[in-house]
Image (cartoon, rainbow, N blue to C red; front, side, top):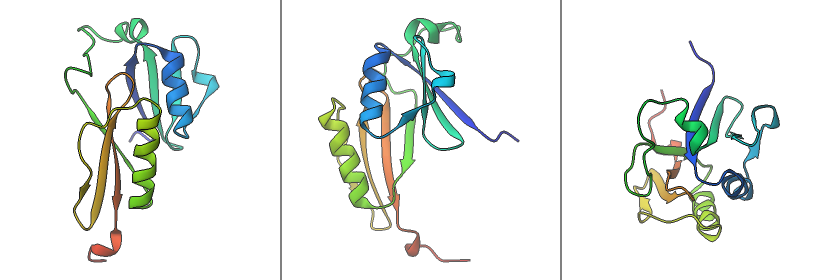
Length: 135
């Protein structure tokens, strides 16, 4: 079975996208980054490949989706607390990210969302595991 996840996203301006996510606290693996791609490290087994649109097109046989007009994928990342979700979303917004939905507090789960500079949608989610029955 696969042990790593690589998500590829097209970006209009690689340098601006790398700066945006670096300022959000992500690091980039220089071994898999160059002038066409930035390998964003989410965890030791999850990576987001930010690819220039021109380079991204070499991997597909269709048009690139304009994530500001349509939603093709929704990426969700976990957080350690509702406060961490709030701080992360606030920081994303201050860096140019766009809030596209109001936060949702379900009691056992708190989530809020933003779109990055290219319109890709991200959710930050905190789940209070103490609210679930332990097996």
